Length: 345
Image (cartoon, rainbow, N blue to C red; front, side, top):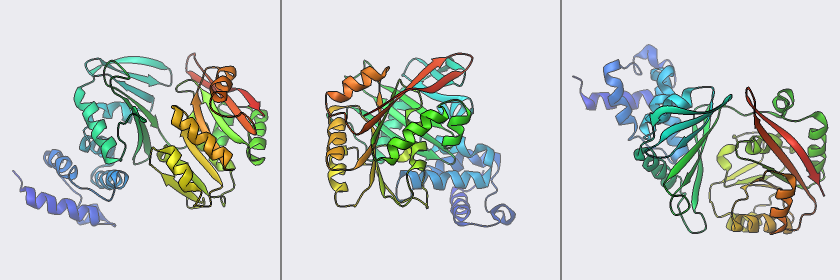
């Protein structure tokens, strides 16, 4: 047996140690101690969720890099999905309590042998609350992001009456994909990139549309690199998708009230707004407001064709000074994603 007080003391020393931790013996724990270390680490908090997870991940990396991701997930009640998050081939995870867990890999969708427990949904709801994201009439589905070391995960959580039973969708981003990589893997052509870049340079608003999992957010994040670093940009709603870059003039907002944040941006001398997904009526209101007050605005939206995208946009905004980039996705030996069409007005 081991003394928990002594174990906690060693754990805190390991967190504070910055150099040669293992050589000093501060971060050396036996296999028998690891479960208790995970339990104690789950009670260590920083100023916010992201800082807390970063501290825990760094702690477990010092102890044993191979268990860092799994142990960090265990501290937030997500141990049951750790094997899928660790799997480099897995892109998405679908959780519906009482049903098998489904995963999307680079080669297609598969049903796993593991059944999703309601405890996973409760853990995701608890994390949403800690992130300041609440279920409201204006926000009937929860969406937020988490960073786990080099991995970013985006969580979409729907509850009744929107859906018959609670369900969660976890999308895994394993590092930022650059414009160069998108060109090399055939996601878009040089000609398509040239048209998108010209629209950005001319100050046009950009809406990236497509079916779920087609790479909308991936492209939006990559386009951020085409905007001059000195221009002040604000990221609203999907701020977790964008990496901290000391060379960029960035403001990140996690408040889900997009309209309120657009008004607040008037006092921030903002040049560009990344508004996240246009999903509900208030999202389109925020998009219209941003464009009307002269902020170059970039967003994503679900659609299957460029015509569908334009019809949906025209219900809420005047489609002018805008580029709509329609993406497509199809299943082959691997999942193929590409820019299908570009509309510029």
